[in-house]
Image (cartoon, rainbow, N blue to C red; front, top):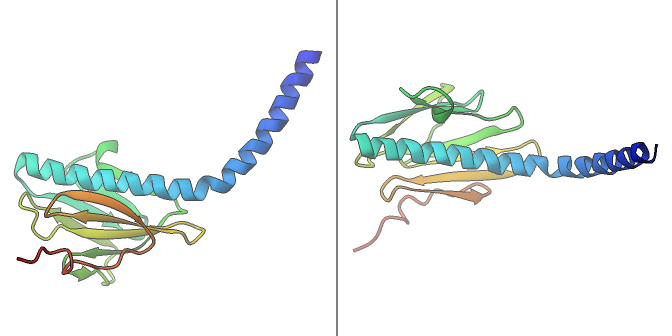
Length: 157
């Protein structure tokens, strides 16, 4: 009988702990999705460099889905939950503002025209930006909206 009471008390205490954890979940979910997207971008760049061919990433703005073609399966696809939305994405040529909900980003082995910034947010209006610099092949994650700095990042000689 005592064991049942102890198990019941542990269950009630862990229930309160889960409520506290649920409050921190939106921020954790945002950063987890940002890391998944950054990994997918880095994988596309690496695959492009190793194979010497162009790899395309399709971005579905409405559903917040990122997929690599011709890859299939979990390795080449990131589906963000409904609480995560894409605010905007910017390529080296500027902000994509057309009405098309599907966009193709090409990863070229030479790194030409595939630099990009993807800004995502959660239900608490927190924003994270994923920045990919194609010239040096780095991916980074920044809090808030990342300002365009394409010209300032170019080295001066």
